[in-house]
Structures are given as C-alpha cells and as structure tokens.
Amino acid sequence: METIVELRAAKIPLIGFVAIHYWYVVIRGNQQDRWEIWQKPGLSPVSWGHLHKNLMPYTNGVGNGDSWLETSWTKELGNSLAKTIENSPITYPYNYCYRYFPGPNSNTYVKWILNQTNFDYRLSIKAIGQYY
Image (cartoon, rainbow, N blue to C red; front, side, top):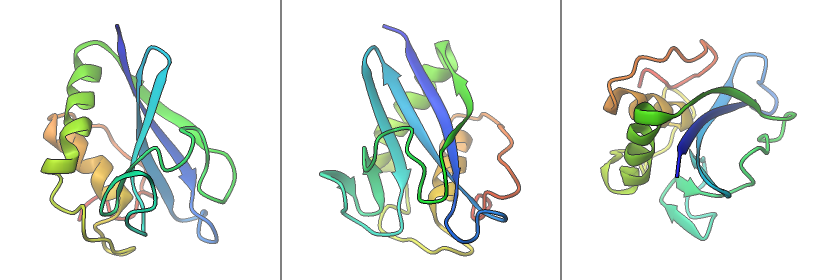
C-alpha cells in the first residue's frame, strides 16, 4: 500500500496575514492521520503533550478559513517522512513545551521532521517558529 504524506497549512486566527499553522497528514489507503503540535496539551484521545494525532479532521483549518495542501510526498521520501512522523511521540524533543514565539510550536515540529529526514523543503516565511 502506498504511503502519501501531505503538508497542509491554514491561516492562524487574528494574525493570519503574518502567521500560518502547518501540519502533516499520513495517508495509507482509506486512513488519514493528522499530526500536529497544538497550543493546548492533551486535547485529543491520542496525544503526547502538545503533539496530537487526529485532533481535527485532516483538512480542517484552524479558525481562519480553510486549509490548503502545500505539497505532498510519495515513494521513498513519503515512507521516510511517515516513519519519522509516527516515531515523533518518542523522538520529538518538545512534545511537552509550547510557545507561540519564538517556539517551539507547530512550525518547529514540521521543520524538525523535515530536518530529521534530511529534506530541505522551504516553508513559508509566515511559518513563525520554524527556526527555533
């Protein structure tokens, strides 16, 4: 079964003109799992501090309009990203720490996953916290 990893984004409420929220979706067959860091811990049935799996439907925005598909990966890179994402509950160093600025936040997580797979995808300048 092919694995697809999507990178999705949405404008943040009130400050969407300068900041966006990124997350990953791991897709295998009919199963879509949304992985993201959220400002409040433990909100979904499956969470590790601020790291949530399926907090919301995978295409939902975060309160300032719809989300959009930034890009997606398949084949070897998709598999590598999926493995890193699915291992992040035990490997991501900031599951229990969250700060809007300068981070760590949702964009710190997304960039950390990319760095762990040695893939240099350029996030938007509006991805506040990506360089934490």
